[in-house]
Image (tube, rainbow, N blue to C red; front, side):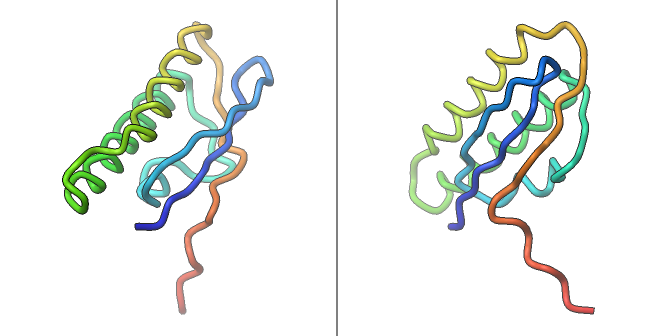
Amino acid sequence: MPEMRFAVRWPDGAETSHYSPSLVMHDYLSTGGRYGVTDFVERSREALDAAAERVRAAYGFACTSAMASRDEIVRTAAAYAEGEVTVLRMEPPLPARAS
């Protein structure tokens, strides 16, 4: 199962990097995308929960690293009443589609 990291910039300019055990993050976020804090938390939570479940389906246990990333995002977001979160990088990127 391919894993990935994604980096974001919070409303105050702080940058954080997070782990996902699955490329499913690409289904919820886009590099360069700007999301309201609440929207970003919800998208991240859904994506990381889905990633953890993919690990559970494949290996019989959920990914604690995905849960830790989810919890870190929720804790960080609690400091912001409003503003936007910008997705700076998603590595690896999705492969280019053939035309």
